[in-house]
Amino acid sequence: MSLRLDMQVEGNDANTLDGLVVRLTLQNLSDQTVDIPTARDESGAWKIRLLAPNGDVLRLMSGRTNRIMTTGDAEGLPPFVGQLAPGASWTKEIDLATYHYLLSEGQYQLQGKFDWQSENIHVESQPQPIQVTAAPVSSCQVLQENPFIPLMTVLLGEKDNDAGGFHLRANTLTCPLAAWYANAISLPLAAEDVTLAQMTSVGPSPFARLLHRALVWRQGDSLVGQIYEKGRALADKTVTAPLPAGHRFLPVAAFTAQDEIMVFTLKNQSVLHCSVMRQGTLERRFLFDLPGKLSFDPAIGVDHKSVQIMAARGGTLFYINIDFRGRLLSLRQVYQSKIPHVLSCSYARSQGVFRVIFVDAPGGKNLEFVEYSVRDSSIDRWRCGPLPLRGDLREVNFSRSRDGDFYAVVSTSRKRLYAIHAKHPPYRIAEGEVDFFPHLVSFGKTYVGYYSKRDGYRFVEYRIAGRRPKLISS
Image (cartoon, rainbow, N blue to C red; front, side):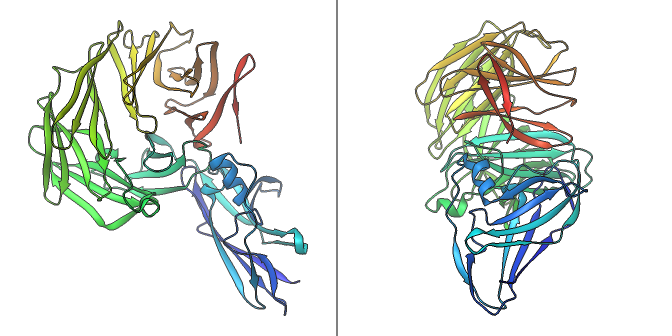
């Protein structure tokens, strides 16, 4: 049986933050029809090999690795077999970001491979050289969402980019190793306060809108909203509205099933305005007087029913719930910390919790982690410190496992990133970066995401094994 496999790479240059599209074309050169896996097959028959310049195999990528690195399921899928007629061909387009980790910085070769053991068919393409460059990161936003299936959206801003470069990707919360997509997006140079909008719901056609996301940014005295599909801007889904005088745009936005973009602004540092963006105007949904002068911008979560707010005044936390007509559903003090300084306050939609980090003083090493559940109004907390780490703390993030254990990651001014657990001493994860932008995900297994110049932004499994923690690489 005579088959030929050709490979086309969409550009020979790639970077550490975006996917790379490869097209494999399999042609039947014989005079017989052959029953083999089609271009829709994800069982592992169609493969991409990553080679070192000397030809050594560094990585094998296929539909099987996609399943392992997005679901954790090593079983794989059954072959999807069809008939390839004489002279006919099939072309399979593969985004490498969906098959494995994004490529690390360096020089490589890519080679296509097709294997079908039933017919003893093994075909390879010619290797093609590629260059992968490092993309330095200056900002990172992560939204843990669960509108239909547990997804996480990551927005990375790139340093020193004359085109206002950002990178948008989606991962599965349960296994965020490979991505659903990872694409570069370009915003105007004047774009400021670029914000990834929360998805409130997916509406009646969940699969059609599953990979739609929206960004909002401030541009001069206006706000601009843009809807994307798999990181590609939709041409007819842009809206611009003036920012009212005296209002400050909070880096919070929401994206509804009706393709409406909802934004939040603060007037006089105490009056919260919720508005829907219309072309040329902000249509107000409600305004609300927050409880006094806040020590930190409120964290806001939006679903299809209401707006949920966590506000901090000193060490006091207030939970507020408002429907879209402006009716107050709940306002209560939920926690009083003895540590007065709020380091961060965020909302994780996937688990329905607000997470607040307190620190004893700027640069201090006594921390308190507080998690408030909007589903049952429960409070869990963990105090730790003083942490036995050299240098000042720079970045802190935490999560909780399904068993209720707290996990935290902290970076220091000595360019080191540590994992913190109540039962173990700090465990060094990485070093060498000023900013790691760490983020913990505990939706089943626990994963920590962080940036490095060589590898870009990756998630790796963090596991307590025996008497000490360790990282589990794919």
